[in-house]
Amino acid sequence: MRKNNQMLQPQVEFIRGIFPVFIAFSTTHQILTYWKDYSGAELKKLLFSPTSELTKLLLQKNFDLVIPIPQHADRSMKRGHASAFEVAQFFAELLNINIDRSIKLKEVTGIKQANLNEWERRHSENPFIWDTNELPLRCSDSKIIKILIVDDFITTGSTLEKAANVILEKIPNAEIYAASLGWKPKSSKKI
Image (cartoon, rainbow, N blue to C red; front, side):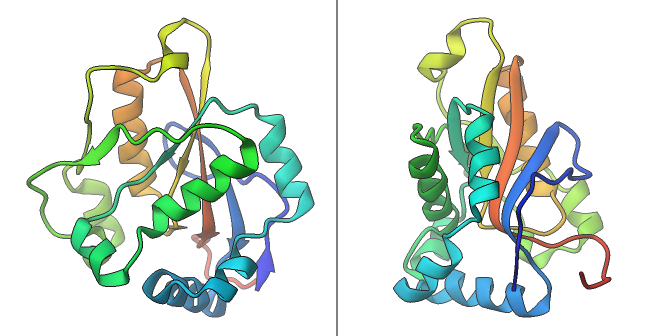
């Protein structure tokens, strides 16, 4: 497993940088998938431990909010936990900031992202909505709002891009970054 020490530049529109705890290749991806499916406490301790360099970079950004990517309720029920929300809680505690859960899944959604290939993910309907008329308290003034959107694992980045679009519709002065436990680089070359 290879831990990440830096902010990475994703090839995703509207996302300024990404902070994955791990660069995920086959073994790391299998371990993260196991945690998502079974939520073992000992494995969680290992996975939820960024390097000191990555922690320092995150703290320097002075984020205002953490917004988790919502997942289907049936997936949370099947797994026994909401993995993306758990990862968001970890980052919120690390940064000592609040979690905002204003982004929700639309009531009627199509096929789950996990069942789509990269092209289908990029060209599918946005499954997210902003679920409230109110903005988070810090978003009411005109200063730049730094938001960290969090998912458990980032594959193509299309989920982040769709969530960022929803955020920017409501908070046009948002500066959006992303974080996750793992990120799969587009290159198949192992580092």
